[in-house]
Every structure is written in C-alpha cells, then in structure tokens.
Amino acid sequence: MVAGLLGLPDVELRHLRGFVAVADERNFTHAAHRLGIGQPALTRTVRALEEAVGARLLDRSTRHVALTDAGQRLYAELGVLLPRLGDALRAPCRHARLRLGFTSLLPLACAGLSAAFESATGARVRLVRRDTPLAGLDTGDCDVAVVRGEVPRDRRAEVRSKVVAHEARVAVVARGAAGAAAPVARRRVLDWTELAGLPLVVNTVTGTTHPELWPAGRRPTLACTSGNFDEWLEAGAAGHGVGVAPESVAERHTHPGIRFVRLKNAPPVAVHLAVPARGAHPLAAQYYAMTSANWPASA
Image (cartoon, rainbow, N blue to C red; front, side, top):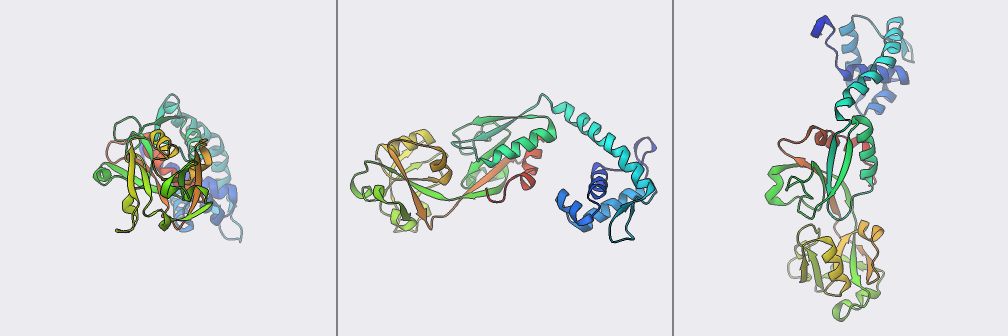
C-alpha cells in the first residue's frame, strides 16, 4: 500500500474499524459478525492495515488474538481519534433532513432503522405521507420511500428497490354486511379462495390487492374503487364490498363499522424500500444501505 495524502499511509476507515473490532473482541470471528462481514475479508483488512503502517499489530501465534506493543499504541490512539473523526464527519448533516415517504402505514421496523440512521449520520428523518404509487418518490416529495406491493411496472426503471419484509393479508368486512358478504362478516378465518366471487373494494393508487391476484375464472368482482386508503376504508365500512389489506392495518387501525378477518393461503404483501435510480440524495443511499443491519428479520 503506497503513501497517500501528506505522506500518510493510504488507510481507509474500514481498515481502522476492522482493527478496532478485532482489538475489542480479541477474536476475528466475533469481530467479523459484529461488522457484518466475512472473516476472510476482515483478515485481509487487518493485514492491509499492518502493511500500510509497517508494523505487526496483532499476535496470531496463540489460540487467542493478542495486541502487539505497536497494536496497543494504535488501539489507544484510535480510541480517541475515531470518535472525534465520527463527530467531524457527522457535523455537515446535523441540520439535514431525510424525507421518508409512506402511504397509509409506516412499518414499525422503520423506527429502529431511522434511530440507527440518525445516530450514525446526525441527520433527522422527516416522515411524509403521500397517496401516490411510490409514496411521494415519484413526485419528488421524499428522498426514500416505503412501498407496499409490487413497484409499478412503468416506474421500475426510475427506482432502485429491495424487499425488506413480507406481511400477511386480512379481509376487511363491514359489520353489517349484506348479500353475499353477510356470512363472511361472521367468520373468524377465511381461505383466500373463498373471496372469489365476492364484491371487492380496491384502492387503485396505493392498494396491494386487485382481482388479478386470483386465477382467471375464479376472481372477485370489482365492486368499488378508491384513490386513497381512507376512502377505501370507508367504502368497506359502508358495505360496498370486501377489502383486503396487510395485517398491519388490522393491528393499528380500528373502525366501529369494520371487522378484520384472518386469511389463510393468501399471497403475502412485499414491503419495498425504494430510492431514485439516478441522483439519489447521499443520505437516502445511506438509509437504503443500512436496512440489512438494522431491519429485523422477522419484520
């Protein structure tokens, strides 16, 4: 590794963080797990740092990793320098705002992710609700967005997205439902196929359920459409048809005119995190990258 700026060794932050993690844990396996990388990659990172500074920092001759004298000195220096460097790097973001777009509900896991993001960057997350297919990302009202269901086919080239969770579905039925939906209102559990032939209320803008999810010839009839979550919910309460929503709606919404009925064998709802494919805000790219380490696997 060659000398860099001002004659200093060409060292990156990942080299220093890797060394500190091993020094903290005294174990490459534990340090690699803490950093979320493979052990071979961490070993190469520490060796590269040793080559850059021209000294052996870790003694690997015993069953337990130990710091050499040079390693002890560097470890002590970095204990002071890295926190100060972190503060310096977060300073430009202290008054920055990242706009996080969503439609009807924000997944609970976003709270932990946003807290980790704010701690790491010093920026703040501002929540923005927009009833658009990409939760405001398509209109420029947000920098990163939570999108339930599939990303619209005609917008896929405009965004970069990844699935961060899957949610079960529930049926939404008016308590005083009449006609074909009346028996459904008294049920506790329904099979997905039992909804075929019933009138369906569909949110055509941000909804995740439409008749095409059922096989041709065994589909619900489209009884009513709406342009946002609130209209859709009221249409269901008014008995215009049966609705289908992510399970999180039942967990976090109450309505005196509605019953939520558990569905069996329903296809899950994919939850995506999306950023613009080009020209994404640097903070949005960082928020997007942090999901793998800060989004619970069970969310």
